[in-house]
Image (cartoon, rainbow over all chains, first blue to last red; front, side, top):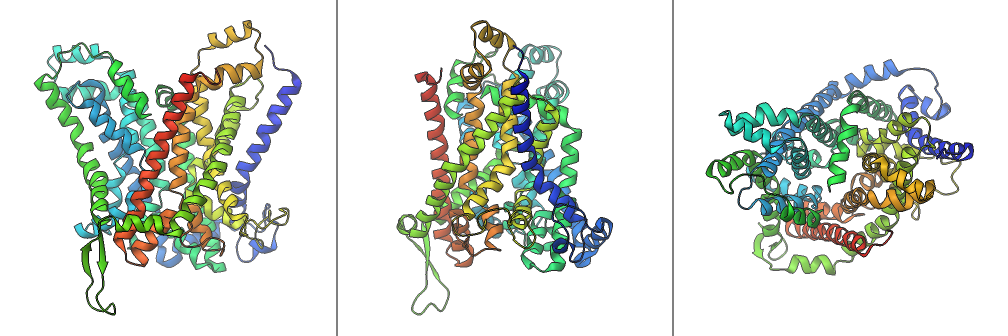
Length: 278
Length: 312
């Protein structure tokens, strides 16, 4: 059935309005990141004044003894390290739950699924108290290790392994004399690869965007990710820092947007596998 | 999610292999070990620690000088959680917030997904990417940017709006706007992915039966994407109960948002500022049970609605 001209126009108009709503803050951020001095107040809010993006970024990199590049680096370390760890650990656990009919499998899976229902920030407070006791507070590990725990990642990995790794293939590997680890790392992980990229991306963004965990466990400014640093600058609320907050926010969202646009073909298809099977 | 999976567990055909082979058990153990260790240390132990902590309270003798004494308090901390008006007030705020924000956001996500999936939409990939864009923006950064857009001297919006977005009555809906802006595209994508995997033969059948676009959407598409609606619903419920970033950022610029606006903020304030760890963990635990309970209830409810054949 062909849609009528009228329904096409109404649909597109509605979607356009929503797109304007979504893009408005992004556009404002882009425009404002180019403004310096009092331009934020004196020029139209949604259009450019004098273009000072370069100056702003230069200042951003040197502000407070060049702490912003450090925050950027920390964010990359936490996101890449945490996401890589979470992906490997979840893939192994999901594969095991999918492949081996060991005793207690149902119980293990039920515990993991129940963990999905617990809001992680609520663990923040006990985690803080615990890490204080263990003396792990204020170290990169305090962010990295908890970030590697993703019950939902295990669930997704299991669904993917169910769908992508046929039992016959594993059996064939065994007949050829390959050990279980070898089968996983040479056969299964390749079949699961597209799904694992998705898993990595989701965890990467979750850690990149995380504020609560690092905020609870890190006091040392040199260990902070960008989100914490910008919240601190934002709370100072002077005009000088306001420009830095805006430019800093603008710079911080660019890497994630680029990562998503360039890796689009991976996350598009695989999201379906997770949702539909549920 | 839980129930559906557990049922699936029983009906799943066992792989053609002997059960409980020693090598199989050992291999399973090795593969599960890294996750299990991390899960126990950073998930279960904190919960256990919090449970233990929540049964204790610190008593200061006399005028409050000297080292406080840690004494077993039984369920006193939990009793205080419920007796405490501030906690109930915070939960009430979240419920009101969630009852409005979650349906609005998921409704919009569903409509956008259906429109993207329909033949009427143009520039599909542009719209899809645009709607998903906020997912790449950290929650606190989204809150900071919107907080500028709510500030009269800077904002292009406040002159147009008939109300003050940071005023007492409006501030909760200003937060709801930030959360909706951040998550609507993500939820849309989950639903859209499910729509894309519906075989087109179903649509052809519906068309043969004389169903138009609207009827196909309501009677064929919506029931088929219900699992992804449940998934996004559960995530939204959990997300609502842990609401923190937006009120935290807005509390710095408006007195309409107090330091204990949400229960999570209150838990932190009690535990860290007032140094009452037992009481703080009791609040956090109560909230966790509430979140898990609400999600579970929601899953059961939608499963029940499905078996009852509502909307079929």
